[in-house]
Image 1 (spheres, rainbow, N blue to C red):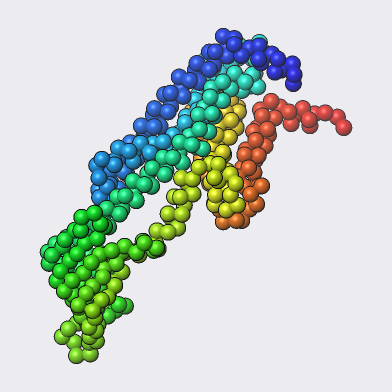
Image 2: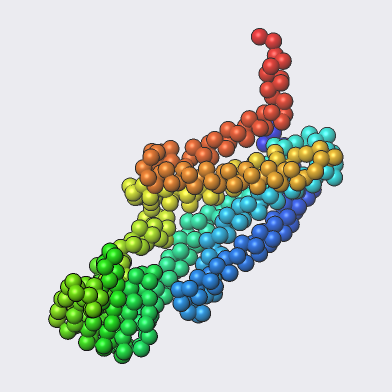
Length: 381
């Protein structure tokens, strides 16, 4: 083993190593551009659609696209490097360059060492992204979305128009609407509200109303004043009538988004804060941030083995196998993350078992490709 590393380090600055690294870098840029254009283009369409549906200002559109890009770069870069290594090694075998290298005693283990400068550089960059840049981008995105949601909450009631809320369960009308400057409230006059209490219609009339948000629950209410409520239509003989001076009617339930808000807060926390936490969700987020760069190192080894092909063989099979391996690996990490969040597995096992399993598969694959099993079977007992 010591002899191998000494030889590999001597060859690290050789023409062979520089040639392989140059091929990996060129293919990395090409693959990243292709995958990035597809994913970032799709993200742009989704963000524009979301901005139209939720009324997000155009000034916040480009920052949202940028924050989404930062979030997706680690995954795209990891996949791009993995495929670039497969393509570079496969090309060297297809052009018979690797065959010549093998005849000189340069094999798969040397290729794994040759690509390490590129792999380690990408590893450090992705580690920075997942532990610093991505949490910051998620925090900034959450701030923009909160600002937009709060702005839309206090601007959707229009004067002199019938409007539907709660998927049509509530119909609202106000003859006059006045925004109070410097405050997130609206004053209204001559109010008509139609709602359903089970199967029974409820009609509410009020002379005045004010819209406000409960600070503790984030629910939005209408505070109605000097009004009357009809349980049933006014023309019904069995209707119930309730006169009131003040009545608070909830129109937006703030509790529905509490779980998603908690997840967003965890994802936007700094890595140092997560490091000393005992919360399973925060432990899972911390391990996920480290797992993405760790997977780069493991996939680089796998990429060299998948890229090895005969001169007559095609390279598409290695790429397809690489995409399948990447999807299964990434999904396994997501499953482990979900199990850790729910407290189904111990933190010490966490997501690490996935990496160890992939390393074991690489060992088996390497031993099979180099005939280690056949040699073991052929040995007399």
